[in-house]
Image (cartoon, rainbow, N blue to C red; front, side, top):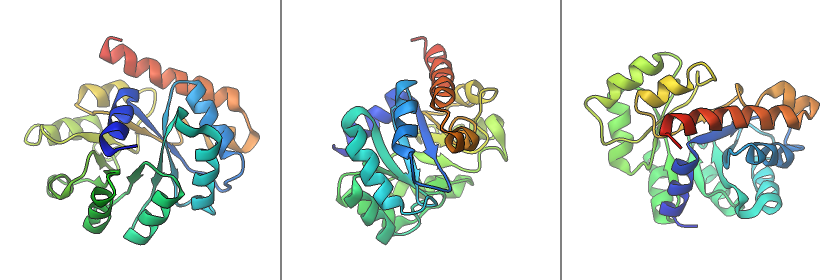
Length: 215
């Protein structure tokens, strides 16, 4: 899938599920449950044990039903391994220009993390498709709105602090999409295999995005 096609799917969905777990087992079922709830963009973080193998397994299990990415990508070596495993986009908590260049080279979407205006603009000018504003809970929707004032051209995705009570406010502040971790991909639901809970949470977040967009 091309970078533009991936980006369109992520933006159309409006939510990127941050899938983080102490075990990689059953994560294909977790991502499937999220997709059943309408969240069709997900990143497997590299804090998950054997993350590259998990990405391969999830890609094989779900195919094009979702757009699959890799998260917590800190260096170009990890980035390349993730892409070879089947990731269509990469997400990082920091700005690494070598990772951005690698994604551009292979026509893959990249979402580096930044917080200050300087970091956000540095990431954007280096070729980021979306800048992950992290940790977004520090400044909340007000900070995101303030960032968007002088930098309206930058697509931003708040991550950290996005939950059912703040999601609409982040969208109103100018978020192009939302990075949602444990408030949707609940660790307890993963541990107990409560897929119905995960699907229900995904449906609730999707409903917020659709209502905000008037869909």
